[in-house]
Image 1 (cartoon, helix red, strand yellow):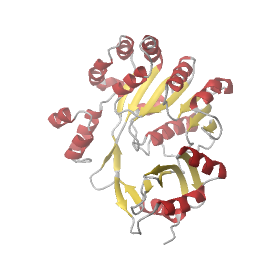
Image 2 (cartoon, rainbow, N blue to C red):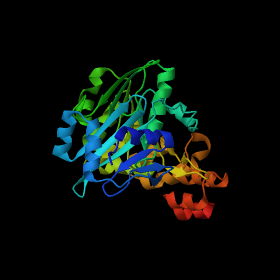
Image 3 (cartoon, one colour):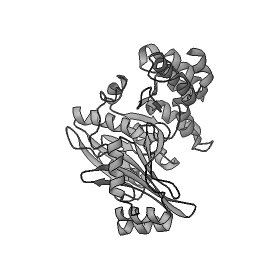
Image 4 (cartoon, helix red, strand yellow):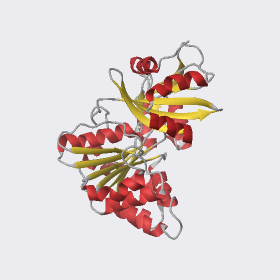
Length: 351
């Protein structure tokens, strides 16, 4: 049977799925509400996957994949949609994963985002981090935050991504969206020259190494509003991850930079809802005088307690607090919340 990649990508849109997986010896798989479901088609071979997936690549991309056995890129198909793709090899066969990227960027209101988000994006400088595991909606939340700025303020917004996901249209603001590997060599290389491009706001698609994190912190300290992402599961864990990237002799300086420049950490996951669909569970850390002191004095382990004390009037909230509320409102099953929780014993007790 001859497979058609465009029809498979169309099926993602029709079924409302988030991801498409193509893996040798399996049928094409769609991910819906966080769960994989096989399409009623024959099982794929590595040759099947290569034949249909190579049709989406330029000659340069084919050479890169064949040299590296990995390839990240984004593609927009007229009449279908925009997708982020990753090609890789598994058991010496080609494999691929596609994620759908909405063409229409959702607003914060459409996401039912906490009200504090609209206050955060009004900041003139500092570092705002949106974190979570793969598939937790980080990119969508960031896109909605940036869209809020685009709708209300006149700014130059520079994004550095691998690849560019959401494509923003110039409204009140103007965008320079740069894709690693196409428009720039690397995150670090782009950030080295970023300040010469006169941005008001910088979005770093992934703060994945020491050089990128250091450049992001420096930009936040020098009067820019910087957004970034990391693959961490909690707000305090995000701070530890950043500090741990640096050697022991550098850590006091990094703690000082974080204490002065960190505005907020939003750490979220997506949980399956009762009746279908998924809901975000954002843990929100807002830096205040107490939080800054804990970071500076290397007492990050006390931040969770400080967040619980500050929930009433600061906009902060813990993951546990959000999950308790979702279970009580019968949005999420009790057992599902406990399964996804960072602190399952505490959550079970509170429920």
